[in-house]
Image (tube, rainbow, N blue to C red; front, side, top):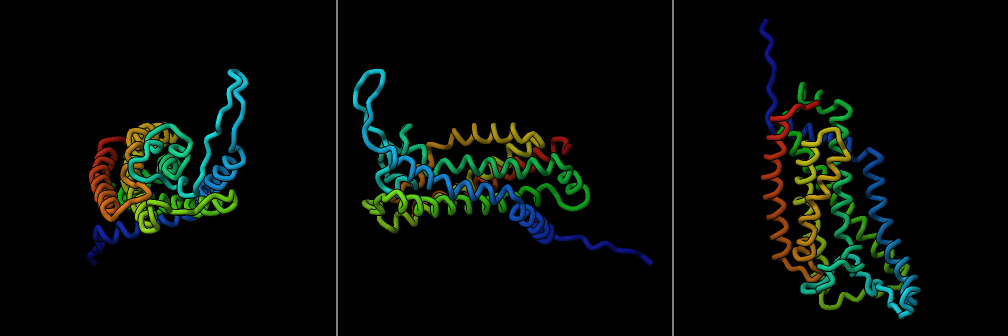
Length: 266
């Protein structure tokens, strides 16, 4: 009797790979630790800076120095278009939700490097999935994980603003602008995650190298975040971030696939 093996379609293999990665990502302590950090960080930032607000005396010059602090809860999310502080090294320009894109790098890099360190990737490519399925699955799961971290930060900022007694006045941004801002930031995750995956598959089991490389590349794009996702965002900002995420996912997904094909899996 002739034995025939049923060949799985790309869609079935990708769906199977996605289920495995989703189960691995969302049942691991790493994911919940990163989400927990994303929730706690804005609370600490807003509460601690509000406690240190006021003036102090510089012990060297003896001059009175005004301590920079947050005056509005929405500053933890971003700034309106044209605000020069968003591009500088100020407290509100650096310690807001945009820094979370570096936290996402840690989540993605550790998740991918664990596949190579444990031997899971070698076994996977040998008996189960192709390189394209792997990259696609990691991109989707990384995107969902990154978005959940941004949403956790948003919730933490609302809690921190309330505890610190900061204003929730939306000002020139408006409620619609803030909603569009958050949607644009979520879509922007799709720009950064493919970068982190490409660096991670190149670094393989060397998690420290993948995190370092991802953060270095992310720094080059960091200044575009406040420009692409201001507090007064419109539908155009959302569309641009969505288009950018799609292009980076496809382009860098192909790069990741090529790296996996041309390099040793070990």
